[in-house]
Image (cartoon, rainbow over all chains, first blue to last red; front, side, top):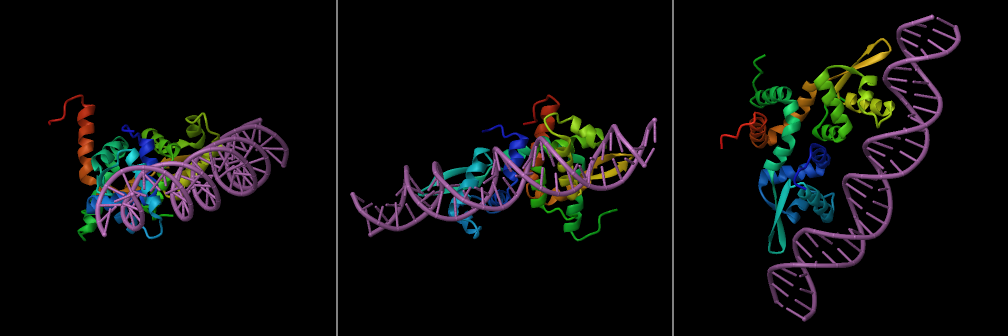
Length: 112
Length: 112
DNA sequence: GAGACACCTTACCGTTAGGTAATGTATAGG
DNA sequence: CCTATACATTACCTAACGGTAAGGTGTCTC
């Protein structure tokens, strides 16, 4: 399922749990299913596993066995690659928005 | 519904028809419901209207009466603003992906 | 002001998506 | 080997979503 069209991508990113999983993998590096499941007290482990399968089917994450555990890591390049065509259409808008966000983060007023 | 959290945004962008509506408004400028509906032969007009309500509730589009028609236009700034916090997390990845995309569009090999 | 028109709103319906629970499979340890 | 562990997989249930159809509201035209 390498192509991962825009439709496909947005469908997979639509679920907040899946985006949270991606965020965790991006922040902390590779994690096991158990570690990830620990971050979602309201969910059963097999639910996490299912979400991981959805992400893996699009190549957004990849897994490597580590004994009896399984280490998942994000493939942010693929994520970016799949999102790029859509992003390109709105580039001028969000590039400005990102600058405003950065200005805000620095606690200084935007140049105005 | 001004805040439009990331969760909220992705839920609304998840539907391909809604993203297509946004694309059309971005490319062609303000359009009426009838004009938009014409682009979706498989859908009934009231379906389009429903999608527009979903987008409008998040402020992603706005409408102005024009006689008995209604002109919808995209609010790309709000779209970008809502997406920016999420985008910022993966910025290094997709900024590279966008460059590769641009290089590809110009028909030249990336600098490598 | 009566009708046509453009759109909105509501009610309803089938499909899908996300959740749990139960079962299956592969690996580590005693 | 036998058991426990760590995930994967399957079956099942419910809620949410996207769709149509029918009725409602406001506006233009004659």
